[in-house]
Image (cartoon, rainbow, N blue to C red; front, side, top):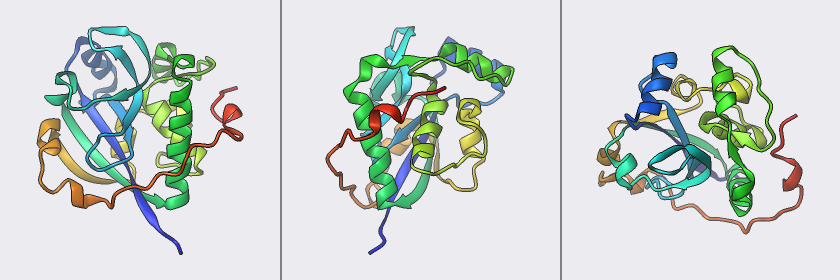
Length: 203
């Protein structure tokens, strides 16, 4: 039987100097993208800073959106309905990457490459929206009609495949009484490593 589940994309604007610098070039207020596997935004992943006070130490992270660093941020939350199989494929891929978390680096050069529409190739290195777009692509989905390395957070907000369910202060979403019913509770399949080691390399 065909079943569907929801994937969530969260765009945030933290107001840090780094975020404001990116905003200067993009002209968009929300310049960080994350992927979440539940409507309550407890399983959230992205490429960002590993420590809140150090923007230059970045990589693959599981984000705590209830942390003060994010909690007062502006945000937009988008829902994408996918098949159960695609959901599992994306979830397993991200969890497998997390098993090798230290292998992945934040691709600051790649972020700068967006300004000049260049693909700056670094093995196992991503920036936030590149990572989110790549996870979808590996499941055969493409919410943004661009190469992954050119996708910006703002591109997700213009995708006809995504439904905006909330825009405002992040803490407003996290405290909504209606968050839980938005999506049925996810069911997870154990991670398998078959074929994963080759799936997330560029070039």
